[in-house]
Image (cartoon, rainbow, N blue to C red):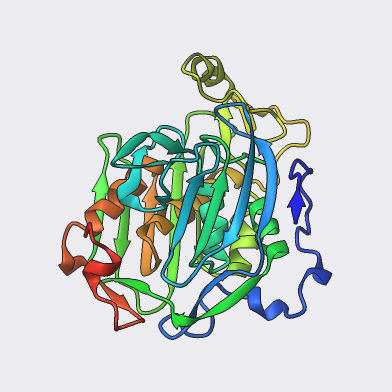
Length: 335
């Protein structure tokens, strides 16, 4: 199936006729995160769109993958390029987006993966191969909603091996000099997130949002929230070779107290909710979903990645739940 995903945002992004069994998409974890089975896509699906920073058209296909494969990107425009696992230790740049590359081929990259990763995380897709014919995923509408829609159209199927969950055993925290921080804490069950931001632009200001991580809450609260930028930053970004594909169709642009998009905001707290959605995607680069509580203040892609590196810097910080036959080194060789 191919979708040219340049359609406008729809308040109800999920057509009820797409699924025979909508219960497949109620939660990314199922009834029990420790006994749930791994999942992959039922069939491949393709979309075409523009890269937010490159401005180039890109074609991307999400494909089913076998158990224990994980989320892996493959540059289809470079036949000799090796696949790039979507892992925290493959992150090579976090300036305005999350960029991954292999250590043995650092110039072959895939950028701006966080919105797609958030949609895969929310839908409980453990294993997928993502073919892409350029260096950046398509921005689509600037949120995760259209990636979510693609995954729904492709469908989801259970596999015959238990899902692996990373349980955080002790608090891990990273900070920046400007007061920004990101933190993971032990949790009794599941995954929950809280985020706060503080911008000088009056249109953004200080915002907070928190939620338990389920598919329904993701769709209702954060999945549709778009990336944003201050107008005064756009010229500087474009001189740096960034934001060349940005427009009022795929990003919120603010100037002081004013939102410049003619259609306004999708939610009064769209800004902080987008940052929380980014964290959902960035933290899926752990390689598996988490049993933890996440707290962030002014946290972005850089701090989110530093948090995962800190988490896996010591085996005392975490343990695996599910699929007990696999050992820690097999799943996290870098930990």
